[in-house]
Amino acid sequence: MKRMLLKILIGLFIGLLVLLAFNYKKLNRLYEVIHFFDPDRIEQNFQQIENVVEVSQLNPSSQPLILPKKLSYVLPDSFEFFNKGFETQDLLDDTHTEGLIIIHNDTIVYENYQRNLSPEETHISWSMSKSFVSTLAGILIDKGQLDISKTVDDYLPQFKGTGYEGVVVEDVMQMSSGVRFNEDYGDFNSDINRFGRTFALGSSFEDFAKSLENEKTPGTVCHYVSIDTQVLGMIIVKISGMSLTDMCQQYLWEPMGMEYDGAWVIDGDDMEMALGGLNATLRDYAKFGLLYLHNGSLNGNQILSQEYCQNATTALEAHLLPEASNAIFGYGYQWWIPWNVDEDFFAAGIYHQYIYINKKKNVVIAKLSADPDYNKDAALLKRRQIALFQHISNTLG
Image 1: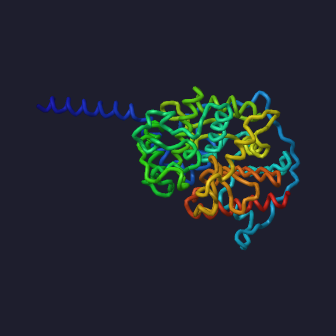
Image 2: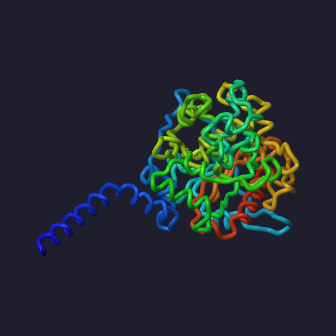
């Protein structure tokens, strides 16, 4: 009897070891994701995400665009936000800035790196990825392959019976899908954090998107839902027959003259994290801003139509206007539009990532950061940073 019990215990122990070994990668990735933003890890993780999760690679352009440099610009000591003065360096320090670049008249006039970031180091963009995905959608629209008046399930029949059934693609692009979603990164049980944990355990992005439900009439309220971009990415893949990485390589990285490697976070099905997984260098993010500054043309190539650039950076409906949002920002096709609109707009990612474009002043500013205290006063700091960028543009223009 004792021998039988011992055999059973040994068998259970061996089975447990096999189970742990089989799931070690998933469990380890879950642990890394949960602790991804810890103060002692956040900078390294943002700069070397390939050490934490799987990525697909982007290669430098065969004809890199090397921008001229004249590093003569000195940052202003202070700026105003709602009639109150703030110190520029304090804001940069408070947001844990790793890199800041300013381009004026197609010339780099300011470039600074700190916190172990270097010009050749890629850095995760988070939701700035959304503006890249919008651009890929725009390319398909220009080609006549994507009709944004059609519904999600017209392109992705597997989304029938989900929160995206009957939702027009344009509403998805404008964060107006009506899908119920909690985007609070400070809430452990929020949908966006639940998304991160299910991804770490190996679930596909598509399965997660299909689990969401609709709560509002599409096209009536601008409610930020990161999974909207993920669904848009799936539509792009379906129409193009290419991965987002391959499409990005062919239609953006190569013709734009990107100088350095890039990478995109992928799930177990090799689908890119469209909503926030693109990695690039500070200079290459800035070049993406130049593409929109020049109405879709860069490095001698007309990559995107002027019409799409205009529509993507304009609040086309009343519910998308800055005054309709509690955040005082309007929304286009995956681009943000500030208050006091003066031909400026921006891409933004959590933890203070920005690509800011001011067409009137001919300015592009890109900023990369790794703020472990992001969830404290995030919205307020976002508004202050845009105010700083606007002030810098005015001093240059």
